[in-house]
Length: 366
Image (cartoon, rainbow, N blue to C red; front, side, top):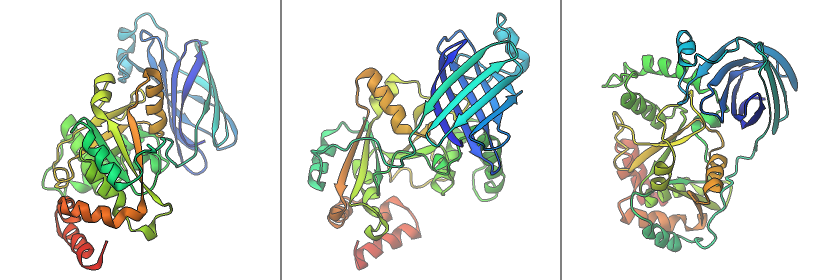
């Protein structure tokens, strides 16, 4: 039952439903978002806490809050003034029936409104984006990379053809409201004694920079790392030693940032918000790697990123995301050429670790 479920609901209204559930051991806890198609109808966010993890559970939720047209949370004392013509429920009876790949949800409120949804999801960890078959060698990748408009595309290199997924969602946590309310304040308290800059999390730019900093020091966040350089992405794809990899291919994603950001509203928050995938260029406070890596990030509240992008592609008959799989057997050749380009551990990771890694490759081989 735990994880993220995104689908469409019907009933008194129609629209998109998102359910984010974290596994607490004996039960699941999280939130459900209701986003009606009719923009004049307010959205709803409901706290969900199941009594157990049985395959079918019924329970009441009494924590119902209202979202405005921008999916912003409305303080309870202002709700009626913002939506004077609506009556708002206080209680909803919810029934969930689930398997690993399917969830049926039904609800009825104390004012008689109802809703239901049947949601399916994939449990595969493999990327669903097909690779460009014509780009199947390091030489052809270099030609392809040079053919794209600089800074219009962003790239991400991965040692395996795994699906795009943030480190936060890979932990199987999905409730970003809990992450914002518990993880971030605790990290801020502990890290402020260790950083030269004390981040003001009430400021959007500094809040984003703080998330970016903890991401680059290994803490799971809803950010995903990208680069403006296809060759930096290739370095990260080939970096891992073959003995630590399962397949025979590495994967490089190319994403049409320029078209995406001009088509879709870019949100710089994790929730509450409609499902989104947004490009962010955070301040590099305390992060010396950003400039040499030509790094930027995406922020998202979606677990299955590729499914979300593919839905947008189908709606508009446009390709935003492309995948290139290259033979792992070309690793040494690629890393040697990247070294000549100046793309090495020493250049990408300022400090002792990067310098030692670069020299290890020089004297012991890639």
